[in-house]
Length: 112
Image 1: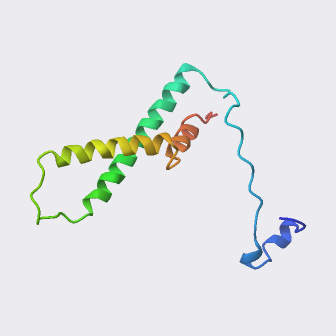
Image 2 (image 1 turned 90 degrees about the vertical axis):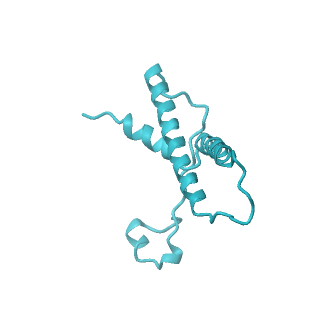
């Protein structure tokens, strides 16, 4: 919002409503909660995100119609599941869905 006050912001047409994006924090800043328990929690959140990504990929694959024209290869389902698992772990390691960070933030909130 350049020179627009907050009260005038909502009176603008939607095409003119633009907020400045906040810059992302640098990744090399040490975390204040870097205990072994928090590291274990990060790993568990990453595994959960990977499992969720795997179930999504598996659901997507089930929507593809089966080809009955050619003979099915015997180990095709096993190979596809292994590929899906690798793809899911890659997606979750690259912060594909952002679920890992969301879970970690929600589980580490201090409840007072």
